[in-house]
Length: 332
Image 1 (tube, rainbow, N blue to C red):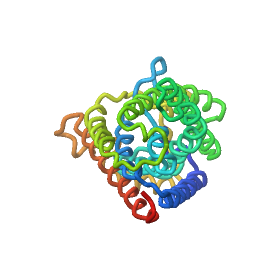
Image 2 (image 1 turned 90 degrees about the vertical axis):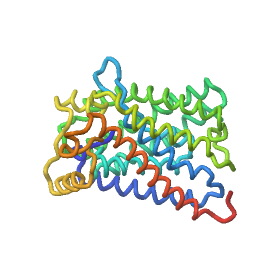
Image 3 (image 1 turned 60 degrees about the horizontal axis):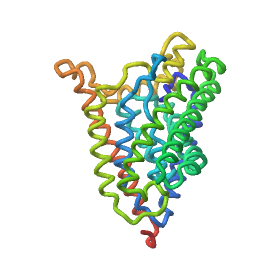
């Protein structure tokens, strides 16, 4: 559900850049003001895992489309909403700058759509009342699935609204929303199952992470497990990702007949597209054609998965370390 710049006007894209940047600033203040920051050290490894997991598009049976997890709910459960927002923003920044996944103008929208709704609405108002402390398997499953579906549906509806407000594409609101919501409900169901699976494993090894209670542990076991999972997922499992268009591309194709729209050619779109092309060393998670001619077909995917996971580890981990150092001295 990564929006491209072609869907957005500069005004709408710039507005959500400001909204997302403001929320990151607010998150920094909230995190640094907390008295217990033990979960901050997990931001890097969990962000790395979400990056790798997003590389794996799974087929949605009977539709010809595919989807991938957003990861916002998983991060919110394990880190809390503010750390989840910063961590997922780190993932999306790396994807846009290094892999040209999602437009630069659309980056603020993508951060808001994928991070805000699961972290600040689905997690506190849906997941927590249903799942509780995460110790009851049935409640954990129900909370994970329902909250993941809700978060993704709200995010996909936001995509439709942002596109409609922009008014630069031939995507009528009624038709667009008619395709977007059902396919993303199915994607959200699968994400809920995967979220439940990860949380079930963590509930057996470190149940305090699911309860939302302050923790004094160093989370070393969880951190190592998630790092290994990230490298394995990004480096190997990403080979088996579905090649079907994702839910957003599929919906656009059903409405317009083409899976990818082209930007209007105004100066803002042109400059940002050129800048992204110059910045991204691994566009579409593969080597550029002049580099890949003598390499195996999956080499670019493997390299992208490992490199991207490490880049997110550094960016989100550095943010976590910086914020941890700013915590009040009376913490821990």
